[in-house]
Image (cartoon, rainbow, N blue to C red; front, top):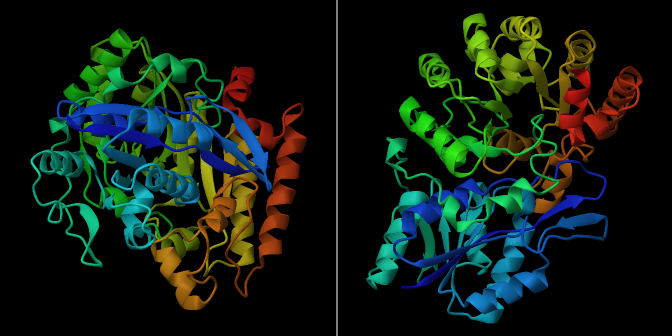
Length: 482
């Protein structure tokens, strides 16, 4: 059998930034479950293996050193190395691992996957740091790739796989999987769960749930058109979901086999189909599952109502993160294209407070087409909701991620150019980062001044904690509120 090594690279952050978290590598575990009968497979998760923190040039590297990564690859001597790039901001580390593979053995087939590979595969292949890129969902594509590799069949006509053929990049798209229940559970047997559960960084800034917890994805795809979001480029616009029975079985597996009863529903739209989401909540209640859960990736408040919120509370929800984005309805409608009513969102905030459901909220400021006064509306709303309802604010600068409508708009307006490095995006997307966008309506300095003032006002309200402390450790903050 061929040997396959799947790698979750280390992560680099601006030294002053927040946000490093350890998480279960679900994408690699799903891929592994599809091919583990075909090959000898191993996962190298650099966020938990030989973990260390090193700082240089204003950046911190979290995870396995590149020397140890090189040793791990050489020791295993794989035929195929698959490297996930979950964020454009972290692409540099994946590329470095691609270089290491080339140095160890040019015959290793290097495959990049994940959201960044889905939108930048042409650049990645042109740089010759990989042989193939998996575009979009990877389970069926990588399985077919391994089957054809084993049978020595043509690898150039696999749907969902980009590659170079005779110097030209070729790619045929693959239709997203309609029935997610066809997927096996992630291959948890290939990792040591304790490596994650014992990490002090386990979901530290992403969740308010203390202790042992794990991510779960119950649906895929996003039918909405928010200008800054890139998820549709990776998971498509069609919304697809696991049956509630499948999800209940998966929850039971984690409880009974892994000893984990706290869950992070990482779906981009877990509540989009209200009847489906409510049916799942009903089954959690019916099966008397004693769980705790939250939604660190965010949830659309306009998909909720009081009845559903009551069931959310009853099923053990520890907290929701909602995507408010802007405090100005015109910006939501015309600039962000969020297709939501701010009035409805605020009603849900009030109902969550009544039911004692803890809330965090995402806000995004600094869009082309937004005025400084409208930005101030968002800042004012974030401050008011924190004062009134303890809604923890996550204030971010609008960042034109590759492939999004926002990116195209910014290039057309000459606000950014196409030579921006992935590191530029890294500093822009992090808390306390550097904004990339400025217009005649506002400067980068305006955005930074407003966020500094906002942070100062929040800090004056929270006493012993600063906003930075809260965002870096929501678990402690919410525990203190109880």
